[in-house]
Length: 211
Image (cartoon, rainbow, N blue to C red; front, top):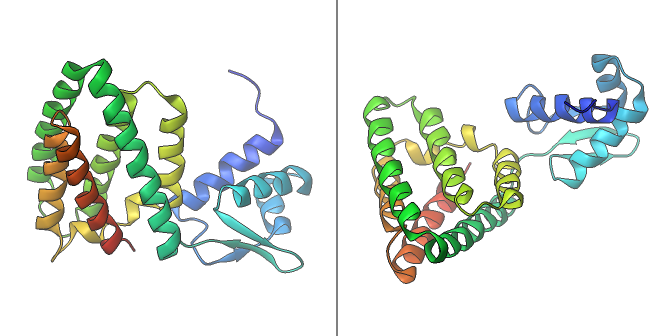
């Protein structure tokens, strides 16, 4: 395994703290505080924060600190549309190159969705359902063998704080969300128009329930 630079170590630790909520959205920290916490000089921490700012996780405010960004409605909408575009591209590509693989993936994901829904019926099961959702989307994109799209999906999901954004899996949206996701997975091997329509409906539901 290649040796990680101090900058890479700082980036990984701060990134994980943001995703896990240890560095909560909307809070302000500082280069000095993070350097002390990580027991590092300010140089690698500064470089890590600059990368995180480029990726949209934080905003560096000179002389004031570092703001951990929340997910605004516009920002969430843009990221969700990016994910939907990658999904559509992956589906079209795989449908041409490996239609049988796409049919099998559709069938497998539908079975796994039913099992996940049956084992997560309580009001507090949103996190598990969000995790399955993300797993399913990643599973579809994986078929395209495009590592860049997989990395972009994972990064976008982190920026959206996907696992904690589960309003769609609570009343009054859960039934519609179940139906929309099931319809989308069922449509994977179908015609382009049917699949696109199902994906757009699912995307619309994600947008209106995101928090």
